[in-house]
Structure formats: C-alpha cells, structure tokens
Length: 279
Image (cartoon, rainbow, N blue to C red; front, side):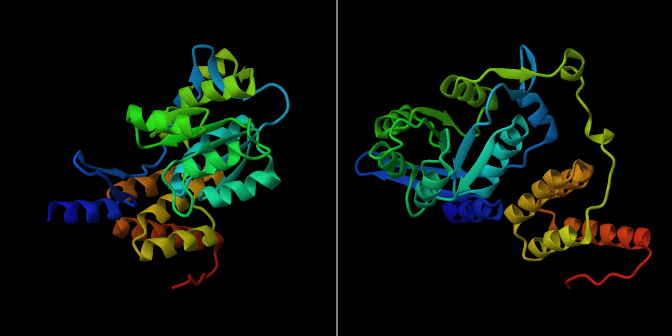
C-alpha cells in the first residue's frame, strides 16, 4: 500500500518511481522529480571566483542534450544558451544518434535511464562509429560508485549526478572543449536583482491559452514547461512565470486557472477589445 501511494504521489509531481532488483541482494527504489529553476539559481550558478560567466572566447560550440524529461533539458538550456552555446535536443538514445549525424555537436550531455535506447547503449554505439572520440558526459540520478564506474566503462567521458551542479558542468565543458570563459565587469558581477525588481507583465493571449490547456488537465510538468517557455520568450514575463511555478510547486492548479483568468481580464481591459479564449 505504501509503495502504491508513493508511486501516485511521485506521478502527481511529474516524476517516476522505479526499482532496481538483484536476486539475493535486494531492491533499490528510486524516483526522479523535476523541480523548477529559479532565476536566482541561474544567476548564482554561473558565478565563479572570477565573477559572473557571460560567455566564452572563440567559435560557438555545439552541444547535444539527450534526456527523456523535457524539464531536465530546459534547465540545462536556460543555463547554457545565454553563454553562447548552440544546442540540439533528443528524447532518447535513438533520437540522439540521429541528431548526432546531422548536428555534429562538439560534446554530448546525456541521461542514462531512457526509453527505447538508454544512454549506455547510445554511448557504446558512438564509440563504435566515426564520432568515437566525441566527449560524452553522463548526467544521471543514479549516484552510486558502481553506477559511475559502469558509465565510464560503457564509454562516457565524465559522470555527474543529478541535480546537475552547474559549476562542475561548466568546469567539465571548459576542460573538454578547451574554453576560456568571459566574465562580466565587477560591478555587473555583484549586481544581483531581486525577483520583485522585475515588472509584472501579462503574456500574450496565445501563450495564456497554451498554459490554460495544460492546466485544465492537471499536467504539472506541462505547466512548468509552459512557465519556463514564457520566461525564455521575454524577460518581462519572468515574474508571471515565477508566480505560475510557485503555484505549480503547491500543485495549485485552481490558483493557476484563477491567475490565467485574471491575466486575460487585465489584458482585455488594456487592449480595449473583446477576446474569446479557447474554452
């Protein structure tokens, strides 16, 4: 009964509960839950003893992100794209190999546990092909030393546990791509804006409708994805997106629906015209 309840709770949080069993040794139950990325975390994550990292010198580098959870890819994209990296994405190893051939990335960051083709099989295929020397970093929720050893033995270049420590990831990127970081001026590096400094601007009707659609079906992970998409669309929508994420953290889809209705009403008044939602 406890396992059934735990599985339902994890599913409601947009995660998944899994088990690894070994005959005579026992079972390990584990789960992954994707949590929203706060603007403060992104700002802090790209800081070092030299200041805030804002980019790197030289040609733009291409990274391939392979993970079956969209929110994991979004978290990495929100950190890496502003630094100047060109990114491509795949949901499993099969897609990753397909994207690899035409995107020609300089480095891959890949999950291990994925459907259709997992990270182990993907990296073994890579090591047998023309991209055999390509750096491939494993990012996995499995953090035991045996898992790390298995990943390296399979062909991964490096192994980092989830949630990904951005400082460690950036150090690995600098190491394997021979990067020289660019830093913001000292005054900019010490200027950390508070969330309240961001103006509260209502997003366009089309974006509100997309958010409303996933809210109606109670898709918490979908709500988080739409909120992050709003924040990337325009920094003016960051405060709105953060408010949606806070409500999603509390699984308050009723509150999110109310927020959307209030936003639509506000925008209709501002536009001085009628608007029919997708209800």
